[in-house]
Image 1 (tube, helix red, strand yellow):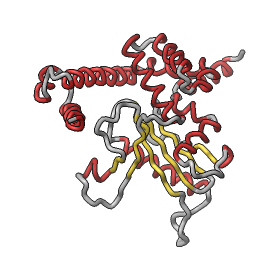
Image 2 (tube, rainbow, N blue to C red):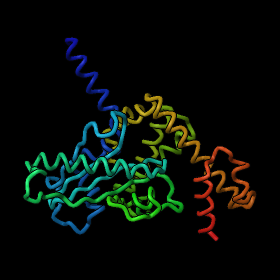
Image 3 (cartoon, rainbow, N blue to C red):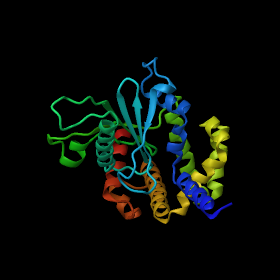
Length: 287
């Protein structure tokens, strides 16, 4: 094998490892169609051939990100961005940038000029965030004006529907459950290969993404282990897991009456004020 061939294979392997389970899962047109049908069950004419993945290169970073764009045959553009287990309103900015770049490439691909008098054709956008953490008091819809400008009327608006875990049997919910099982196994085994293999075993036993995990188990292990190879991602992920654990402990103590909301900061000083307010809102909903 020549040095050039080896180098090409290494680059290809690295690129594959930098993919995410989210993106890899929906590269398969069968799964992509299931995802679309979950969002639009009324579209009985949709087929694998009417769906295309919109790939955006070099928009934000070269690091791991989980943004998926889908163009449908009926001229609908869906953008799904996985927020993972860490809630952040900054994802609205990512959506705005991703959407703008998607439209720019669409106009180029369809040979439409923005500098002519003729009005261009453009697909209708649908924006979604898949959140794999607990819903709590988080909103069903995120809005740029609400989150960044206190609800003021602004000249550009971005609204995204947020999808949480539910009792519905669909591929999006299976993916969310898969992520939650992974988080649980990291808490139990640390950021190790055992956490990855246990996640796959448990999900297969529970019929969660079973066909995908059974057919691509080696690739999934590689993808998930690549999370641990990036120190920055590892630190961020570990921080998210620690925060979730503290939130769970604080909520349990609040529910049992061992502490009140004013004492959370004393017992859990690592939790920021925003998390304490979230706990307070959840407790108020239970009353």
